[in-house]
Length: 272
Image (cartoon, rainbow, N blue to C red; front, side, top):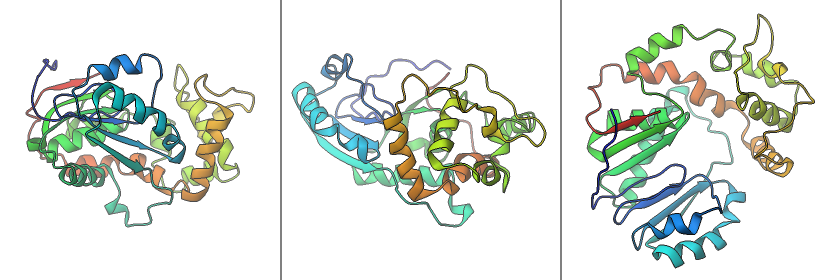
């Protein structure tokens, strides 16, 4: 279903930059300098800004804060640092649905009743789950990079994914641990980003490790620097990879099963 343009006095929530409606919220995972003031100049006055990222992201906030104030005024500036330690809780308490509860808590804390949700990649599953569980909080949903499937269809689709696909491999207990075990953290991060930025997704053959599909000589993606790599490596040295493997790879089927009996989504949805 195509999402019609909707003008509302409610708020808007964005996951990767973009605009917002009256008294809106812009939630950004990154900052792009090119055309940023022009984009912000179209936002309403006193837009609330939520920035989600690691401590390195925080270093750009001083300059960005000035741009936002100049363009739209500043209704609120909320810093939400990414967790720097692993989540050591029961596997049943880790998953997309837990992220949904976090979103609800955030909206309640900011006194936001209904929002537009824009989600990307694995975040789309959080967006879909949020829409299923709390349709009363959603004005509309746009998902990028992950097409929409009903939970039952998603469970069926999962059966047809190749066993050598990284999403299948890393969902199995012990497999990513063996895959990552003999590599240092920076090499693991580097190979993951190279792997996922391939024009075609390589498939591991029987007994082949997913990260061995990347050659040591393969370069980083153009948009990622060695400095970026070291920042991520330091964070993962503290947190480990337990939670990133649980969410999204190991919780996928478990969360889809919990949503299988939910009613159809009843708000504008754009999925591509």
